[in-house]
Length: 321
Image 1 (cartoon, rainbow, N blue to C red):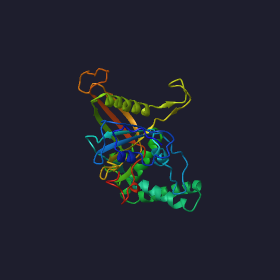
Image 2: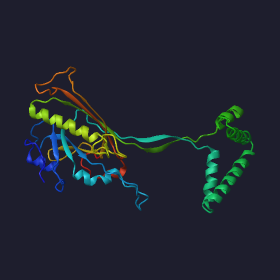
Image 3: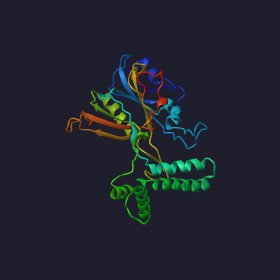
Image 4: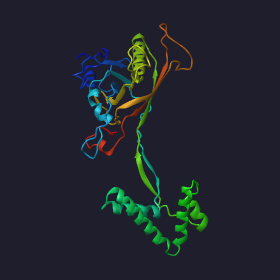
């Protein structure tokens, strides 16, 4: 398979970028900025434009494990539609966050949960639910007749009764108003979930000759086309019964003909936003062929899947994700 590299690319770098693409059915469009020879000591960013493959909804036998987009896209990553080579951006960083938030569980709620859980182990769901609620109420009421808990328990159930009539009085409000106390919420910081990482890249594009101007134009056009959603109607934009997902992207930092030995990795990403400022210097100025002399390209990506502990390995090259 012939890959359409610019002649300025070294054979080593060509081999590195095309690794794993030997079975691609068509030539891969390869674009780059700046338009100069890459050497084995150069660091750069590879952006692969790939066709989106939905993960599907079937689950595996292993703990209801669902197939992820990262898994479903592996073959498409090996056969990208386009490859764009850009310099390492000025602001290189990665960040990941997980959700933690406060959670509460007062004594009445705990008694209810314990009662229902105990009975459900030995009875059917419907019968166990009724029995569990009954046992929980008995437990709460028996505690309520014990000394200081009488007023708090009465206020708790009074608030519940009033709420059933449409009142917005909370149990905490009523207990506090009648007893000067509040239910101990047993507050804890609890894990709430994962997040999807986002990345922003900004490039100054300043063509120095005609070849570089043409290359920049192709890069911008390729990215715009890849980001756009597709309709099922062939000759009628926006028509058709369904709209297909845009292309997605696999990014990788490389050093010469190898994966970068330090910088972080990416999971497949969607481009959520892209903008081009054709007056990068603040005023309109073009060459004789009307190519702007200075442009600013901004791309905003978000990964398709979260980062998990299992994504890391002792064999990782660099810092992992």
